[in-house]
Image 1 (tube, helix red, strand yellow):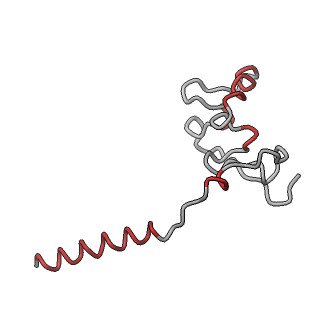
Image 2 (cartoon, rainbow, N blue to C red):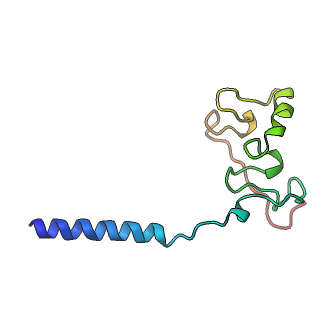
Image 3 (cartoon, rainbow, N blue to C red):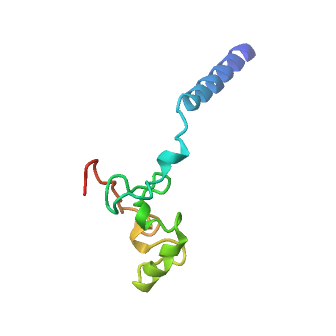
Length: 101
């Protein structure tokens, strides 16, 4: 009985670890949009935060005053209201398809 539990546990740990190990890590260069990407294009995307790089206040703090000036700021979560999925769980921010704009 103990042997089968130990074997099951060992198998579970092995399978769990191999499931995570098979997922290759994303290179850092693929997480952020190109600096010269046209705003609103497919290439203008922050994969880390799931928003356009040109509007990403977490990657570029200098954008915050503009959002605050237009009233699009959530002080509680430190994000633009238009990007806050905690306040608006149904919010969908979709990356434009390749070849857009």
